[in-house]
Image (cartoon, rainbow, N blue to C red; front, top):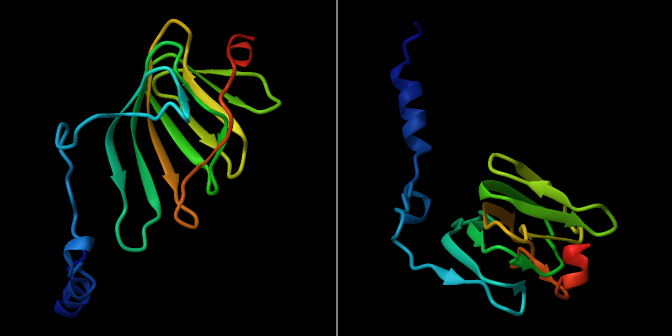
Length: 154
């Protein structure tokens, strides 16, 4: 076992956070009210919970989104990409020009930067995912037109 010297410990203390913005924060379930995604960018009922945003120089934003059966995003892109972690149900993700893909609990979906896509629940089952994005020039997403019923059901 290696013991740390006093100088090593002192250097570690000098690197410790000193401001409230840099302190570890724990956000408890229920500490934020749920909200609903706007109809301009979503079809159907989509509830948002546990929204988070980094502080200081962090560009990360995200939250937990629950799509009721048939609910989905509009077409959109992310300037720095997006990670989805599916936590419940059965969903769909589609990159423009490619086949739809089923997504289920435990799946991790990586959507590259500026790839036009949509995602949502299956037609008969709700789906929840954790969405993680980075902001570029103050925005994590560029919204486009709604996914039509023909596109969703094809």
